[in-house]
Structures are given as structure tokens and as C-alpha cells.
Length: 303
Image 1 (cartoon, one colour):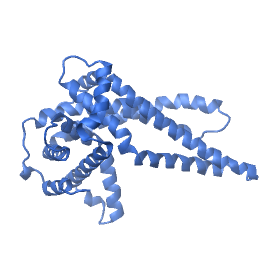
Image 2 (tube, one colour):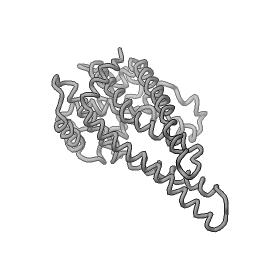
Image 3 (cartoon, rainbow, N blue to C red):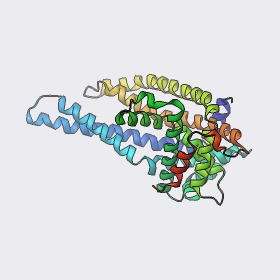
Image 4 (cartoon, rainbow, N blue to C red):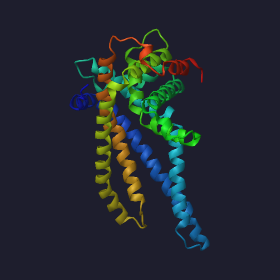
């Protein structure tokens, strides 16, 4: 299968109104990280009022503020960022089948209606997406034989599964796109289950395209990080305190914003039509899926 990045860029360009909405949401989140870090610094600097004369409390406070904001962002991801991503996926899927470009108003209308139209509410969306992610972890754990790296240790198993979970975000969005495209009288869970099984059936064919798009995306992330170091170094020079390593941390935070907004949108726009064309007209063949029973049980179970 050929990765058509140019066609993906053109498709994302047609949905730029949705991309800008995602961008502002990520920018707000990035500044929350900055604010939380600075609040932690301020709390730590209060120690100087007690004549401690040490920067250690400020350094500890900054790390605590950053980590707390990261944890809160992770906790609310399913009810804040995920609906925005699904809204953009819906517009990408709709625009893929249309010759004319949707107006900004039409794009925003479809973007905002996606959650209620296909999933009902953010809680149900988060539950379906979590099951898809769990299924993808099962698929890739079996494919990569990751138990070799765990040595029977539950902690190492959890670490490996977490790593796999992080790397399956695009595949989860492809399956959510399949749910949106094939919406019918069937429940969302059944459509998501079929999409996951079809992906498991064709997982080998997607290995090379996923390597390509991930390589492009993370090389792009490194370039964005390198570029953003310069303006943040300038900020470090004019503020009345030493930012130190936080220049690098904030550069990565804002580079991640650009990656999540633009690079990930292009990657998803490249993978969605590939998946649709690959599974079009196919039925699930249980004999081709090693984890068939586990995936079925995952969606049949109420969680």
C-alpha cells in the first residue's frame, strides 16, 4: 500500500477550519502546562521569605506543577481532546467522499455534531475508544511477542503495554473513522468491533505504512523542537530569572502542540483512505486472526 502524503495534506487543507479549532485547544493546554509550572516555581520561591536562600524548593515546585498538570490533562483527555479529534475525523471522512469543499460553517457544524450523532456523549466515546485501544494492545502484543521483554514481571508487562498503547493512537482513530463511515442501525460497539477485527486481519499490510508515517511525524517533531528552541532561548534572555532546562521542556511542549494539530492530522488523513480501500467489501475471517476470541470477549464484556 502506498502512503499518499501529498493527497493527505490536500485533504487536511480542505478541513482547515477544524484544524484551527484543534490548534487553539492544544495551545490552551500548552499554556496550562506553562502556568502550572510557574505556579509551582512561585510556591517554591516563597521559601526565600523564610530565608532558606535556596532554589531547590522552586525547582521541586516547578516539577510538581508540571506533573500535576500532565496528570490532569491525561485524566480529562477522553472528555476534552478526544471529542475534538472525532469531530475532525468526521469532517475528514465526509470530505473524502465529496468533490466540493465544505464551507467553514458546514465544517464546524459537522465537527460539533459528530459526538452526539455517532456516540451520544463523551463518556460513551471514551469507553469505545478505550476498548479499541485495549484490542490494539492485544493485537500488537501477539504480533510482536512482547512477552519476551517482560520476563513474567507484571510491572514490565504494564510498561510494555503502556508503550504499545501510546503507539496505537493512529490505528484507534482509523477504526473510529470506520465507525463513522459505516454508521447504521447497528450499535457503535458492534461496528467498532468489526473495524478492529478487520484491522487485525490486515495488520501485516499496515506495518510498512505505519512505519513510514510515524518516521515522518517524529522527524518533523524533532525539527519543530529544534526551531522552537530559538524563540524560547530569547524569552529566557529577557525574563528576570533563569529558565535552565525548562527552555527544552517548553520547546517540546509547544512542538508537541504543532505535531498534534498538524502532523497527526496529515497522518490520519493519509491512513483513513488506505484502510477504507483495503477493507472495502471484506468480511471478518476468524481463522486469520489469532486474537479473535480475545477481541470478541473484550467488546462483549460490559466495562
